[in-house]
Length: 324
Ligand code: PMV
Image 1: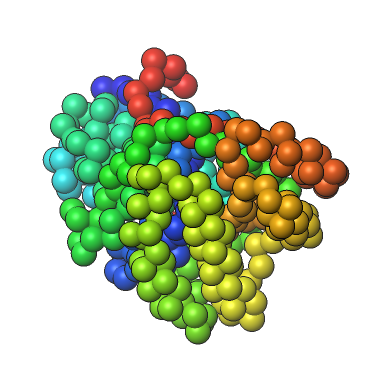
Image 2: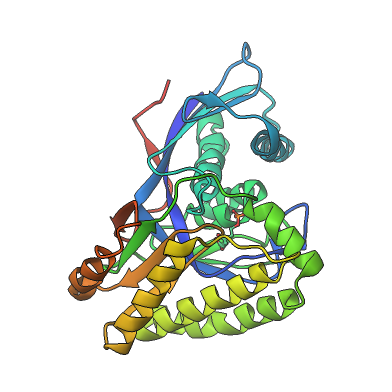
């Protein structure tokens, strides 16, 4: 009745930002992501009668918003499976939590997988993906290796992710510009965008329109097209975020500096593309032959705290490494 799962964070190339149906995280648009090999969560889950439901993250008991989302996933799992035994969960990330590199995606993805594995209730990837989605939308993409497509669907069963293509040799340079916790979680921020940004619905439509083009480019591996769509998507997302409320900014100065330097490299003919999420980190997509050129430019920006050079990762998987 115990299982451990290791899961990678994922980076959206076409972003999720807001729901059609709030409670179940049924999104406004499809999204597409790449799994990040170097950013991992490990989660151990045990069913035991003498426990109360508890969740520990990096050694500390989780309370507040995180605990509510965990209990929400648990309630759904119990209703779907009939398993009502209390659970104890411990999770660890090998990267900064809640600073805009999708720790909730790897965490909830690992949780959903571990719930099914430890209970012995059979589930395919679609079921694990749909359950993970209830914790955090982007977690729907976590069970999938390589490149994932989250189909928005219309209800709980039809909103889950599938694989577009397996991992290949693309690199993702994750520049850490700050490890401070972000001012507002993405799930709360996207609700505010829905209520206040005049571009919210338009962005969702544009994202949906881009999906077939990105799917084709991924399948045929047209890297510049993949990069251009990704960068345009990031610009669209941040136009919506920046026009939320009186202006919401996840960027810091270093974020902007990196964006300018990547654009300069593009002007010089280097095929590298930036994207950002609900946080100040910039992620750069680049093929192995150009990693050196990009890294030497980034090395000149002394404010960057760390650069994580990641390959394309795997789907969530069982592990023998138990945290307790
Ligand atoms: O899954 P959430 O609620 O953490 O939202 C993720 C939002 C973005 O990271 C900005 C985009 C995405 O698709 O991952």
